[in-house]
Length: 144
Image 1 (spheres, rainbow, N blue to C red):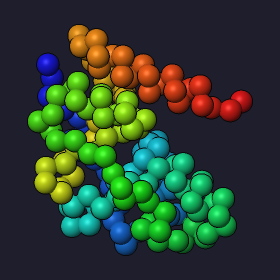
Image 2 (tube, rainbow, N blue to C red):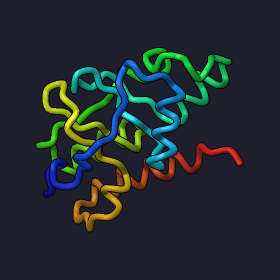
Image 3 (cartoon, rainbow, N blue to C red):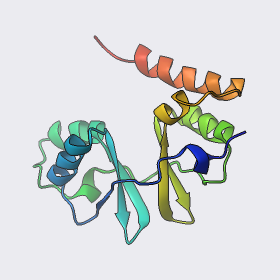
């Protein structure tokens, strides 16, 4: 069974607590990503998603110059690089998340996403099932 360090993205773009929401949004656009980890001296401090920006900033009429700290999620589910793909998939399914920061201690060392699993030939049926559940629940929850 694969370890997370074998499938994670280890060159992770991040923002700091000094950045504002606008700067995070610009980075998301440039990188074509929906989530950016927020670090403070290499320590993972939070994560901000495009959904966070919409719900916690725009919908609440906060300016784009708002501090990242006010918008980001800081109650994060993380995984160790030595965890198995099965463990990570289980965490993602249990918490209904599509991206999982990879940390050693408090230091951000990578990120693993549903896409990282999708491009692998997973032989573990439980991991496949967990990923299917995340995708279906997110799809079924979408309003058209």
